[in-house]
Image (cartoon, rainbow, N blue to C red; front, side, top):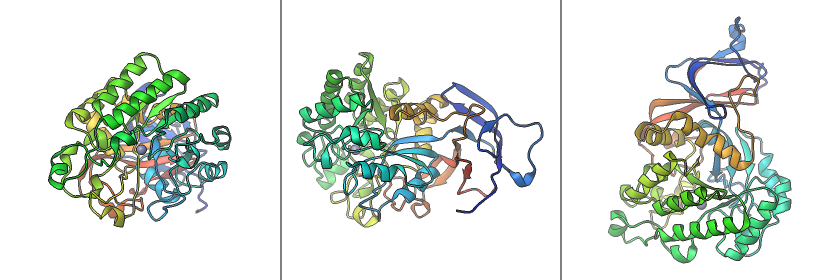
Length: 432
Ligand SMILES: [Zn+2]
């Protein structure tokens, strides 16, 4: 790393969104050479000590937080590792991520949690740890020791904890340490070999169907255990209208349940699958158009409070095998801002401040972290966004080691242009 003299940063005009304080206004933002947000000084530092980021149409928020990423480290670092995954996240406007524990070996030991937590990368990594030993679903993981090592939540993501008696123990112990359980709510007995929801492509190619009940019944069971144990429950990547309805009821009842909406489930439906392309295969699969509408409504009415990418890299060769053979999952860090701003703000009329809350305050609250803010005196941790920029997704230019995205070659509107964290501006696409 170069030893640069720290510079101040001035963004003379931007829409400033700070969901912690409710601030939404046009203005200037100044970060002093110590990396703190400060009022714009009457006399600016000399040009050699100041970076000015002046472009029309900028939006500045506190750094985004993605509570659901797979960095494949250790175990599949040809697809992604802490450094490449973090670079992809930072390119996407994120300054914090929560990594999932379905690594090889699974992140079910304090040593592996510490390894993730201390990785020196472009974003801060907050690791989750396995809910069960080896993610095998049989025995509760050493929750207390994992928490002590820095695990922010527990999940067997990639699979649910299918045995309700085991899940009850996991949730009881997680509650005692004050941490949420995140569940990949898909019942394996109902999913069986299903990979896609009923749609024209599934019919054409004869792909096995993944019924909505596989998710809905899992959500129902998880909520019952939340009620029984009092443990905070976070339902990952919801995809079905009925799941949204169950989360809405649970929250109205006052249960500590949160639900997550991914950019792809908000933007795409099963009927959009263009053909035998493994980059459209994910778990849970894309829903019907009615499911997509219900997810959007759930975000708008505050049922689903958290956006997360489920960034799931896979090496190109594995995804090139076609839909039936490809592994589940798509990358999402670098396209998340464009997709969610376009779908939710531009098309559905979501308030930009609420959009920022779903990427900043709600995710940090889930992880038990104070959210970054734009208040003077705070250490600057920023996402600098250009929601109106049109760009074509060229997978060769992504920072991720993997290229498995359904948006490859497509034009998106909106993206992150820079992040600021720990005294450093990171603006890979800009000449400043
Ligand atoms: Zn999952």
